[in-house]
Amino acid sequence: MEVRIQAIHFDASEKLQNFIQKKTAKLEKYCDNINKVEVSLKVVKPESANNKEASVKVAAMNGEFFAEKVSDTFEESVDVCVDALSKQLMKTKEKLRGK
Image (cartoon, rainbow, N blue to C red; front, side, top):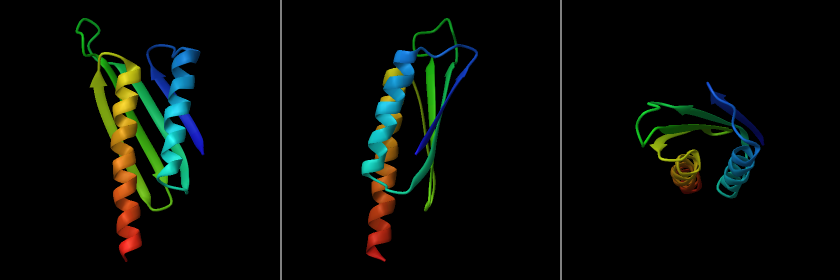
């Protein structure tokens, strides 16, 4: 599984990149055939509190899945996105099993 991290208009710290790698690796529990995960990080309004936006796109054999969240920290945003994606992947897996 390839994980691409794109930080728009800033450099993501190594600690943040490692956190994202660890979180996105958990998605493999829900879907075996994930090809690529693209994580995009950006600061929306620098002067406000809830300004860290993370969007995560997962390309798997059975389609593409996407989640986006804005929170106080990038870690929190990524965490919520991964939770949402795991639910999406589980739903899809159950649908495929049902057929």
